[in-house]
Image 1 (cartoon, rainbow, N blue to C red):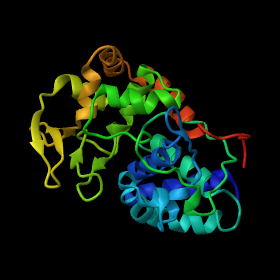
Image 2: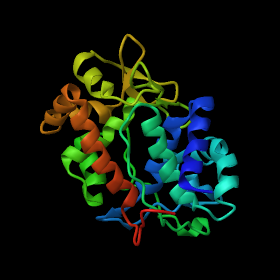
Image 3: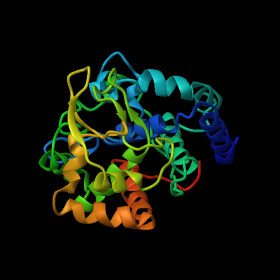
Length: 266
């Protein structure tokens, strides 16, 4: 069994279930706990598969240990149980295959992430590690700068919201950012610049913005219209290739933060 076999099975899963976006979120939240600021440590180690505590119980990860891992289970059984790939590497690869499957850039995947053996290997909390959707630029910088990201990187990574939907029973927010939530392109940025959004509150009591078409933006999304972030929003809106290039660089960094001894093959 090889990487190409895993990729083929992932593509078949996405073709059948249209579940690429949640795999991106799975990888994001596994790797995104890394920090080197007021909070330190964290790495992509698949700790959230344990739901007796730790990352598997974080509110920010709602739906991932159940929905995402449930969808991925047949592939996990086939390749992780047999020792071909670790959980954490599979989650990383699953996200990268999903991005390209939905029309996004090809993303290189390196391997060698070591799986947590219990929830005790989780970071202590999501606070100061994962971003909140109802906060602005100061919060975004507080979260992402200690991970080694620039303001430009923050905008590029935010572009992942071009796919997927919010679900009120998970995040408290509700709706899709773009009109085709299964197409990875620069629509997130063009919509941000061209659509007018009004305030609304979800059934879960969370504030967000809504366009008459039904698409949404979070407060943390529209915060990117403030300078200097707006410069890169405008660039990515007019130049999808520039967005893809910057996204790949920032995304690979996110997926590899806190890792050592990664290799090019399984």
